[in-house]
Length: 531
Image 1 (cartoon, rainbow, N blue to C red):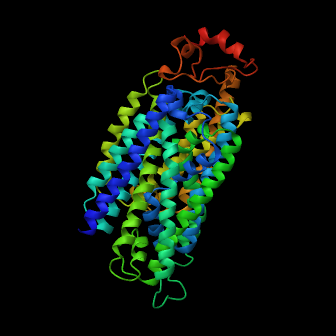
Image 2 (image 1 turned 135 degrees about the vertical axis):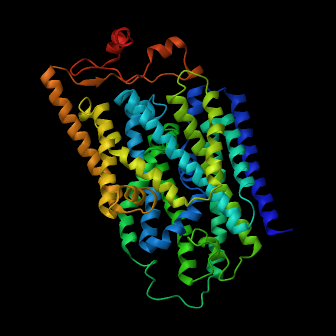
Image 3 (image 1 turned 120 degrees about the vertical axis):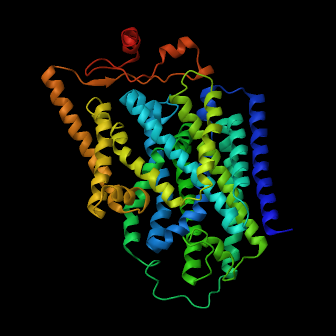
């Protein structure tokens, strides 16, 4: 039998087996306790420390790591690799810290969109939800592209069957089991993937014997402009992208307690940094040694390392590498799909059956699968999403600061986003001297550090200017600042009765500063605010 047929068969078998395990766990869970919609979306306070640590790792690592880390080395070198690897784990710690505060203050939130609705209102909520859906869809497309690249460039087989297999299997068990079952499967998928990585690391240690290594490092691999730029670009871009991905937030709600959340995030982040660095460093070694490259952009350099200088690697180690890739891919894909379900259910299908977003996940898979068949550069796919998230990050984070309540409103939120986008437009024009080419440079060409630093600065400036103008207008007209009422989340479908849902509306209505913000005020004013 050929390598392609054996690898395809074992890969699909691995994907289906994990799917069967997930369905078994979902079935067993429903026999023990029939979960309401809220638990389906959040697995509220149910996951202990070790399990949540594995889940933080599995939702962050995916097949993209094996391809994008070596590809980034080609331009950013060893400095860029270190910056990128650290940036893969750092956002988990930041989001966990922010989420811990958010969860403690607003324990009923079902998604990040719940908080944005309460804090800023409907229009900012729609903007944030659309950015999150776009960001997660890009991540899903990157995963499908990665697993397709594995089959096409490494194994020499068509990409469509494996992509369809992952998409269908993960969609089925995501719809059946929700977040809780996804988290349980993360443990097995994460452990299996790391076990295979250890075997490959031992194999490389034994077989890596290059005839000579160029010294000093070639310009592309040694310290260079893009490597130094990565010190700013990668932490900012990865952190902002993580803020606008529902996966990490879901694990915050699911953590059994604050201790499980904080320690679990540390363990998961540390594992992410190590694994991402090892895959990237493997590609670095292959390029440094001058091994034959199976792709021009360096994305398959890790697999070239396994060949130890030969045109092809031994079949058994190639198969192990493929199984590791599909395992990481499946764990990441089901996490993204759960995040999409949560965002859709909490924002666009509030009060309706969770089956609506479940079905929409199947629909969303259609365009992402189609785009993945084009084989776009994974690094560029992430660049688009990361930059959009960076533009929106500061206005969102300012909403978490208590002293800014009322002053930073939905209007200043939108103004901050627009000013952040404008800063990128101006930078691109100054950089290349053309508006269109400038946008192309910033969004689809380069991880340049000003592209990520400037939006942070100018979005904050935009918020400040808008808040100042709004303050002057309110003072001139004698209008009070809006202050959000006590947070009371709205139910989802069968999670609460219609009467409970009407009493727990999370519309971002407000009262003038100085009003009592206790629940009694919410109840007394609910009839007036409903008009």
